[in-house]
Length: 253
View 1 (spheres, rainbow, N blue to C red):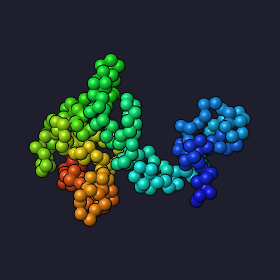
View 2: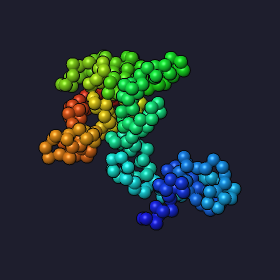
View 3: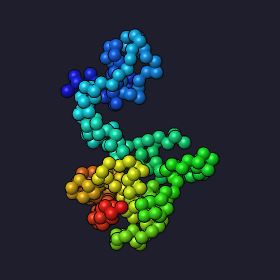
């Protein structure tokens, strides 16, 4: 396996080539984002074309990779989907260059750069900005709450047992139409949802888990909610209770 991996390492970043392409001159492999700006090969210095190798892509797609954030293993073809839902994936804020958790970027923008984002919306007409209110599937105007979730202040539609029955206005459980916005705005794969803490969660067959390290004081626990079994946080417990009603409502939208 090591020999195969060495064949598909990107010439520049030395990681398994993501969206791999190769030089036609000597077959050097690159990630698409690492492709040199000129057509001169950095290895043999000849003028060369850059092509996508379908055979190479098939090999890379089935190679196992360990996430550098959560250490979970996935296949390379699933890298993009994994990083969307990884509870520990990080990103860099383009406004202040602070490193934040991917899932908390919307919350970071709302708390640290609210005025700046408002100015962008007003001056540039950024109608697709994440913080802009959006109309949900029920026709109600939904806004981002303090936890990064959407809320429209309408009725949730079922008795969740932990909130007052309303969607928001700034935290707590949300209705099916706003949950649908949460899922679509995060581009989550099928089977992933957002609990009332604003954390991405999924079912493993043994209940919903978000993978956050919020159970430090829990007995007989490694401090994490799951990610595959074991104890779960209060927010995932609440989501588990509401899931059947939420799924029924989502299927009607």
